[in-house]
Length: 61
Ligand SMILES: [Zn+2]
Image 1 (cartoon, rainbow, N blue to C red):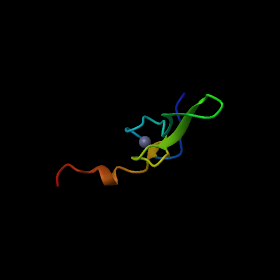
Image 2: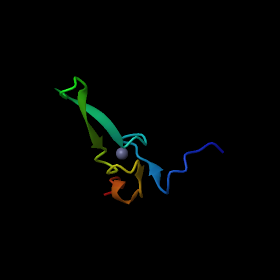
Image 3: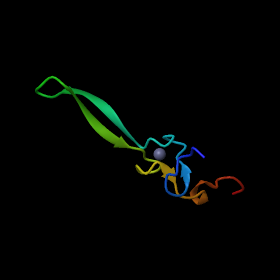
């Protein structure tokens, strides 16, 4: 089956499995290229998957 075997857990719903994205800061390097920073997803901490549903059980409280 063509499926993402991305360790265990579910694909992070916050970043859809793309935990790190390049963000342009607006500044430029001396050579004229745009400077980018790599931002990790705060929800999955850059792993791309959510380990368990344990922390997300907000219902029924
Ligand atoms: Zn994420």
